[in-house]
Length: 488
Image (cartoon, rainbow, N blue to C red):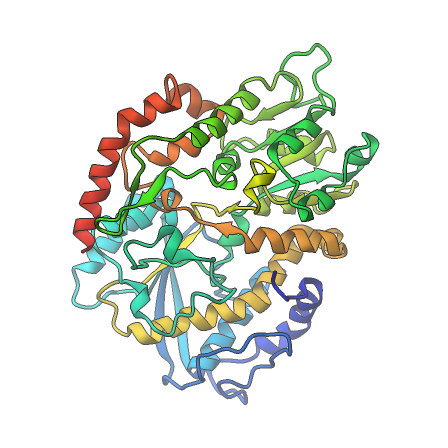
């Protein structure tokens, strides 16, 4: 569990911001602050990258237009934007560089614009941009399929075992010992997209239900426990499907967030081949996977009066139920907290539950739309860009992340040590699975089997999951094999 004192650090960030933003890199005019003189804290791990002066060299960064958390082009605005600006000021000072950002359409709907730019860039002798921050689901698979990006295990300065990186990336979505993209605290989208369960503490107390913090810490927080609690809380008066505008619910979930249940259950349908060391789909889905899938299908298909997963990915109706104090649980993303921070009722936060107690640990689904950080194969100065990633991740971990917690979850959250413990569990168990990382590259998308929302079940999978799996596994593995050959 991380040693960061979240509230203390958040307040420290606010106190330091006027100092930080006044520090300019060599390209921004004179400064009395030399590289490496930024204030440090006793509880921090050391930064392994030594200070150096690169004479104001401009590091060009490309990222999607819709990514507003990581783009620091001015000091001012929200607590987060000020903190990110301050982090960049420290990176510039520490490495003696400038950083310039260019934004380009690049979410799922506009991914062709972003991906075509990457392909065109790869054809130049030197890449136009030094560092790429791309939406994982929209661009990572494309970059791999076209062989555009560098194996980051060759960049020695990247210490990916440190807490400012997503844990165990090489084993979870690496390819035969290679890692073509990383997820780190250099991008706050990793935090905004983490799956989480919000709960109304007043409804919990009024129904005499167990303390959720105790359940989580005792490893007894399971799907059966959560949905069992939900069934004890109101619903539609006529016993039918509840009305989001007026009824009280036990559980309301965002349809995209609900795709994280199978990840949280550690439901795995991939395995590493003993022949080539690469990951392929198992020959069959397996009894445990089918059991978990059928369990969730049953829960949501029989939600009659007190549970619902909102059908549209763009629907705010479900979130509004919790915001109005009419639902015990809301399953969404960590970023959703900004809508609840000023609520007039007390609420708490928990990780997405385990399947059962035998599972033994939590797996927090990392958002597939969060930024994947990549370096083009033809980047001009790979070593320096690696240092930028490491230093930016380091300072963001200690300064921008606490600011994000404060802005998103509010002082109601920060003032509760037990809620802070929940956040540490969520971050420490966050995992991007292999299929989530690869989901844009294989057709039909095998990650579909993790998506439990209503429109997916009705439109994309007909019949049993085992039949769907057996009908596609040969095609999936053929596509994986083709990908691996292109990367060898």
